[in-house]
Amino acid sequence: MKPTAVAKESQPKNEKEAKTKILARKKSNFFFAVSAGPDVSFTSGDDLGRLKMVGGFGLGYTFRGRITLRTGLYTGKKVYTASPANYKGSPQFYQYYPNLQKIDADCQVQEIPLNLSYHFGNKNNRPIFVSAGVSSLIMKEETYNYFYKYNASGPVISRSHSTYNLNRHFFSQLNISAGYQLPLGKRFSVIAEPYLKLPMGGVGNGKVRLNSTGIMFTITANPFGKLSSVKSK
Image (tube, rainbow, N blue to C red; front, side):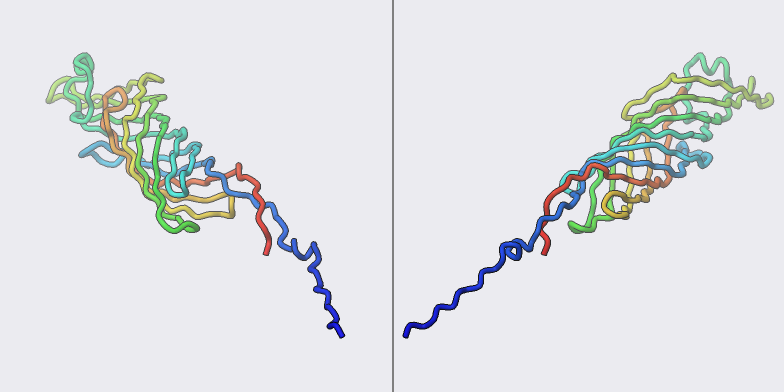
């Protein structure tokens, strides 16, 4: 007697395809940024200037998850005091302001940075980064208060002078910074980034070699994620 063949129960097609495809949003490498923070300017050998707020908008692109290129447009005030040794006027300037004692500056400046950042950590967690780059400065408004004497033993006199949209200085500043980036979901993050900006050339009417330091707080948004299919377990 032949053994009765037992039919192998076939798995339903729907169960075979239990691993269904789910649409998931893949993070884009391109992002926008909004930044603001305190900034202080100073010249070599002089006291720190007044603390002022700087802010603006930026954008960036991340390569291979570790290297980020950033740029933007930021605006703020540079309020500082310069000694005569740090202010380079023309020969005609010193005819108007002999025996110069000091210069108080109050300047509205736009900055266009171009920075490259490197992120440390593993694939899923790279919160710490260092950054370096250069900035171009556009002097929107410059007001200088000159303190001088007509003769060495005379009283100190002050006179102010303002210019508008007169000076532009391309790639005139070296940027150095380090930061910490905290993700907020898949599309947003916040960044705290202390920085130091060093002069690569003189800026403004007096060709002042201006330093700046501060900390920038940034919110980034990643709106262009792509939908990709992922199998569920």
